[in-house]
Length: 482
Image (cartoon, rainbow, N blue to C red):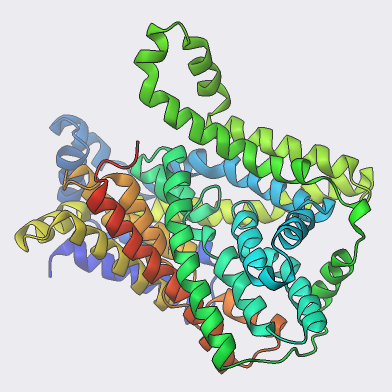
């Protein structure tokens, strides 16, 4: 086994052992892993990385290799934080404001009203899929589970289907569609345009969601689970919110605007850039300039956050004093996520500095793997890390350090497909070391065995069906859709 692969093994064992065996916070485990791998990396591998992978002159490569490990880890942390810091903070504000203003509840009720009671499972899935873009899954499930309970009490059936429908939609966007942390880091490290990442993530996510929802319907028909009591304090808060009358909720347009406006700006900028020359020739360069400004990822998410804050200020469910507390609590949560993802990016950078990308590329080339097989390698690499330590985000930011160098080696893979393959690979298979497993199980009143048959299988099917979709898109549209 070559030195880069030995260092990779050391790094993964440090992360997994730190989180599982010593119960360390993910940030500390990633920090220790980055420092240990950095200290153990020989200078000649550093020079090889900077010279052959990064294209630096031999003289500059030797200077960069002279930097001590603390500086290299700090620089990696800074680079990743610069890419995702503002985005995660703004996404957290959007998510909190949608929850506390009643905007998220309005979106769910609009889906339910449009599709009707018979299509309530589809309504829960669709609204959860949309809300999963700015709202972290655990928080989203707290909001949605009272609705599932209310529907099950009203219809006297389909409780497990309602629960699984929420999971099928809400968890899908978590690892595929920015601004959630995992896809943000992966897209940033691979240089993927966020507009393309959003469009690709939504398309692949719809396929994964559909496959998972089909299993949910089958399971509900063959293994129904009745509604059970739950006295969770946090759920009770959202249960009270779920009982809010419609006239006290914001309109659907104002509720969906904080999500839709950033997505349209980011995707619009990405699309218009493909026609920049023709737009300039027709004297429409001003439109391109406007979208280039407003479609900047940081500005687009900030605009979304301002719309969400405006909605919360006008909401009948909150006061001005609540506004300050809402922003404070959302930023506190975002700070932890930024620390984890920032250090995950630093750890990935340290892994790449071992010349791991060259080793993986040489291995793939020697085995005569096709370009699609590279996506499969990325998928299963991420899955193994996910199964070992439980966190989808940690699995993604670790995996990108392993396979990210494949894009630079020119193996014929559009980077958006590699990013999506990593996102789908972060799905299989969640079990008892995943916080979502316990959140869903305990709030739903399921036993551990029932949670595995419902939550774990639904998430795994999301990853499997999504992975198949990525391979299909990569085969038929190798240069992406636009």
